[in-house]
Image (tube, rainbow, N blue to C red; front, side, top):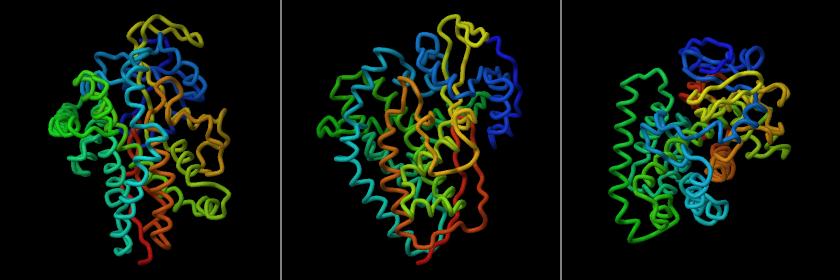
Length: 389
C-alpha cells in the first residue's frame, strides 16, 4: 500500500453521501489511503488532472481488477497504442458527425414517443418512464443490440456497475453481475449474423468490420453498456430534478442566460454520475512526498475533483451559469469518455428541452428532496413529478 495517511469511512454512509468525507479528505488528506476500499484516493482536481495522464505509472491494465474479471479486458483497461487502436476502431460509432447524422433523429423520435404517453397522464415517475427507456433505447441502437428490451438493457447495465463497485466482495452482487454479462453475450450471439449480413455504424458492426477479436468485441460492448446507460439515465433525471428544485436556475435557461447544455454539464459537475476511475500503480512512484509501490490500487475521485473549492467557487451550489471547463466529468487524460458527444446530444439537445417543452407546468410531486445513491457511480433513486395535461 502507499504511504498516504489513512482516512477511515463508514461504507454505508459513504455510499449514501460521499461528499462530506471527500470534502474532509480534500482539506486534510487530499491523497489518502482508505482501508475500507483498499485503495489510495486522489481527491483534488489538479492532482488528478496531472497524474491521470501519466499512464506509465497510473496504469489502466488491471488483470485482477473487478472490471476486467467481470467484463473482460475492454479498451478502458488498456493503455498507449493498444488503447488508441481500439478507440480509433469505434470512432465511427461515437463521432460528432455520426451522432448528428445517424443517431440524433432517432433520439428525438423516441423522446417524442415517450412524451406522447406521458403528456396524457399528468404525473409519473420520470426515471422509469422517461430517463431510463430513453437512454436504454439510444444505447441499443449505438451498441447494435437492438434485440434487447430497454428494461433488460437497464438491468444489465446496473448489474455491471454494481459489480464493478463491489469492493466489499458481496457474492450476491458478483453473481448478479455474471448473470448480466451472460445476458449480453446471448444478445450478441443473436445479433452477430444479422450485423454481418447488414453492416451499420453500431459498435458491434464497426468492430466486426475491423476484424477485432470476438472476445474483445464482447468486452467493449459490455464496457459501453456499463457506462452508457447509467450516466445519461442518471444525468437526465438528476438535471430535471435540479432545475425543478432550483427554479431560479431554470429561469436562467428560459431567459437565455444559460443553455440546456450548461445545465447538464453543471449537474454532472455537481453530482458526478461517474464518481471515480480506478488505476493500478505500474512502478514505484513518489508524488507530494507520498510513495506508491507497484500494484497499489488508486482511485481518481472525479466526483471530488468537481467540487474542489480551489477550482470552483461555492462548489456545493448548483449554478447553470458556472464555467465548468475545468471539470473532469468525462475524465482528463487519454481515457476521456468516448461517449461524451453522445451524452451531450442525447441529454442537452433532446431529453431536457423536450420534457420541459412538452410537459407544461412540470413540478416535483412532494418536496425538493430526493434520494441519491452511490459513490463510484451516483444517481437518483426516484423522481416523482406532476404536470398539466
